[in-house]
Length: 308
Ligand SMILES: Cc1cc2nc3c(=O)[nH]c(=O)nc-3n(C[C@H](O)[C@H](O)[C@H](O)COP(=O)(O)O)c2cc1C
View 1 (cartoon, rainbow, N blue to C red):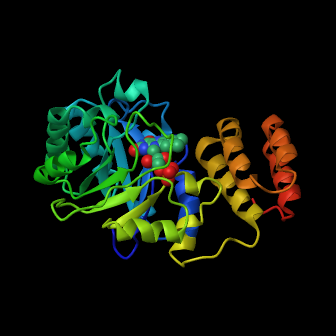
View 2 (spheres, protein in one colour):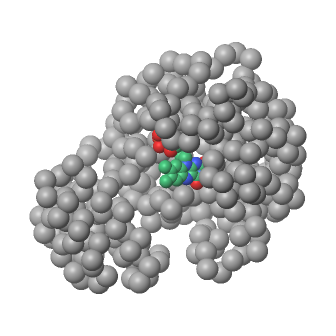
C-alpha cells in the first residue's frame, strides 16, 4: 500500500466513489485511496440498487475497500468478495460515529468501546483474505475513554497490517481541531495520521509525531489534485473547468444523467468555492437537470471549451 506514497485519500461516504477516485488518479497515479464505506450486509446481499456493490478495482491501482458491520462472519464474507473484485487491501471501519452505524447497528465507532467484538471481527476478516487488512479508527469513544492505543495492540495481535487514526473521539464528531498523539515504540503497527490535514506542512507535522503517513479527507473536496500537489507530482491545474467537466463526464458514465446531475451539484459547489460569483453559479447549477445546460454553465463560469 505504502510504496513511496505516504499520503492516503480518506474514505468519504457519498464522495469517494469510482468517478471521484478516477479524477484523483489523474493527479496522483499511485496514491492509496479508500472506497466509501460499504455495508457488509449490502455487499453480501448484493443489493442491486447500490452500483458500488458491483465495482471492480483491478484497473484502479492502489485501492483499499472499506467495510463496516458488526457481524464477524458477514464481514469476512464481504472482505472475500472485495478481494475477488480486485481491491488491494481491506479496511475495517472502526470510527464512523453516525447513530445508524455506531449505536443502532453496533458497528463503526462502537467497536472502539467493544474491543471483544472488534477483535472477533478483525480475526474473521484477516482469516478470510490473503490481501492486507487495515483498520480506521478514532482516539476513543469519548474523553474518558481515549484508549486507541489498546485497540492498536489488539489489532497488531490479530494480524492487522496498519491503522489510520483520526485525531478526534467519537463524541467530538467533526468538531474542534483534530489532535494526534505521539506514536510511541510500543505501537507495533504502522499508523497513518488523519484529521484537518491540508498542506505539506501539516503532513510534515504528522510524520514528526511518528506516523508512517498522512490521510486527507475533506481537503480533497473540490481539490482532487491535493495529494498529487503535496507529493510534488502535479501543480494546481491551469483550468479547473476542464477537471470539473471530466469529473461530470465520469459521473454521467457511471450513474446516468438522471442520478448523476443532482449528485454532481455538491462537487460543483466545492470546485467553485471562493471564486467570484460562485454563489450565482451554485444557484444556477442547483436548478439544472440537463447535461447540455450544465456543461454550458461550467464552461461559462471557468471560461473553458466543451470537452465532454
Ligand atoms: C462526508 C464525510 C463522509 C465520511 N465517510 C467516511 C467513511 O465512509 N468511512 C470512514 O472511515 N470515515 C469517513 N469519514 C471520516 C473521514 O474519512 C476522515 O476521517 C475525517 O473527515 C477527518 O479527516 P479530514 O479532516 O481530513 O476530513 C467521512 C467524513 C465526512 C466529512
